[in-house]
Amino acid sequence: MPDALPSDTFETTEDRFERYIDSFINVLGHADRMEPFHAYCSGLVLPGDRKSVEPMAALLAPATVSAKRQSMHHFVAKAPWSEIGMLRQARKYGMRLFEGRPYCFILDDTGMPKKGAQSVGVAKQWCGVLGKQENCQVAVTLSLGNEQASLPIAFRLYLPEQEWANDRARRARAGVPEEFAFETKAEIAQLQIAAALAEGLRPEVVLGDAGYGNSTELRDKLTAWELPYAMGVQGTTTVWAPGTAPVVPPYKGRGRHPKCLQRGEHAPVKIKDLAMSLPPEAYREVGWREGTKGPMTGRYAIMRVRPAHRDERRHEPRPEEWLLVEWPAGEKEPTHYHLSTLPADATPEQLVGAVRKRWRIERDYQELKDELGLDHYEGRSWRGFHHHAALTIATYAFLMVERGCFPPGARGGRPRVHVPERPAGFKARGTSATSRTA
Image (cartoon, rainbow, N blue to C red; front, side, top):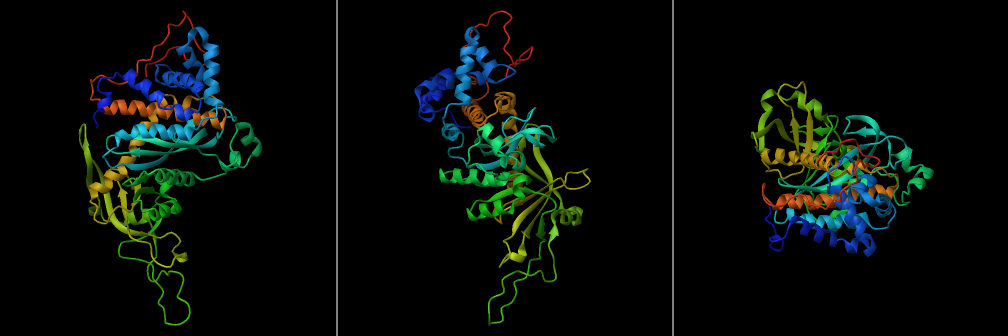
């Protein structure tokens, strides 16, 4: 991990936290917003079960909870500062974790269970936290990641098409801006990557699960941007098996060139069918890194194939890509499939290591929710939802750098925010009977 910068050497964590907060003044646009911004970020790092506005206000100013709550609520839900600008500033700070080291882009989404139907974007949809269809909000994220660290740099709410994107009345009540029409998660991810590239970021590979890899349009766009990818796909995705390819119709020297590819004597196959047809010796253990309990390995078959999506509309075959099939010992069938445009000379260890890096984002989601309250926002508006997320990620960026710059046991970690003593028996609305230490 990177060492502490020279200017940080003789500072305490509290000093760096204050300096970090001060760096956002241009993002906030008005000096009067600095105090509630400082309070909000301080509240996020304090111990407590709930990181919504009132419980945080109660921790920070127990004698004047109402005034503090009103100030913080106005700042997060109504003040017109840019959440994109805040994420950009947090990313610039967090980049010290990646300077001089290659990093990847990680595409993913996260669900936040909700009761009721008024919170922006809430609908019955797949919620990964619960592992089933449930009432929740879902946000699409783009993160930077490598072996040492990861950090979300873009965050946007997904609007279900019928329940929200096409319902003008609900959009108006939640303050959804007109420019945000319905877009699939893969389309949102594409926009996030385009914005990151425009700001000069260049990953060594783009990672994502099947929710994003299933989009041929997204994979084609990454190839057009000359960005290698290693993306999950479903077993129903069709490919040309090794040694087969669509046929380019011959040109007889007169008239127009034939426009579309033909199948010839072979046909594309579903990835799952191809995987099930392979002999047992095609699968072998591949290690990708050393873990705390020894080498981390998985059972994979790896081969070169050609994706077969809509070949009948193409003039030439798609280039060969890597297909990774994971079939753990003892399972009845393969569990994961990945397509990758990493170089043809990539080793199995490099390929498996790339797809495995995607799981770092799960740690980010867990810490952002459990420790900083990403999913605790109780407002209903588009602006408040995205402001709260940006503030949470900005605070997380600081803590990640603190964790990265100091070895275990060194002086660093959470800023020691001064907490006023609360009156005996005081309890804010929204808090549980007991609180845990984050």
